[in-house]
Image 1 (cartoon, rainbow, N blue to C red):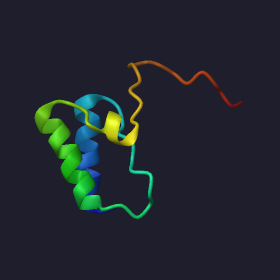
Image 2 (image 1 turned 30 degrees about the vertical axis):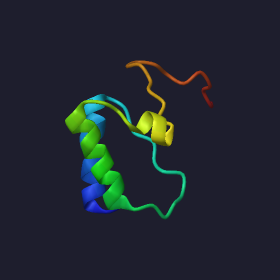
Image 3 (image 1 turned 120 degrees about the horizontal axis):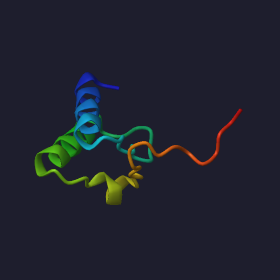
Image 4 (image 1 turned 135 degrees about the horizontal axis):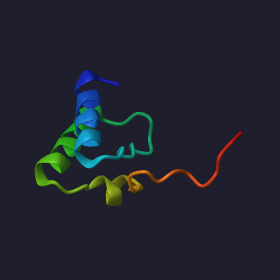
Length: 68
């Protein structure tokens, strides 16, 4: 992952408290994705929920399936 995209992803995670979903195709434009993440932070609204299917989990919420 490019440094710019990585930094934007970290900022997004710190701002919202959860991780954003990535685009479905593996060969996506990382600069465009970084711009979208930074726009989410500026607007204080997560556009990735609708666009990429980000699932927002509540703090402290754990998965229902545990693998031993």
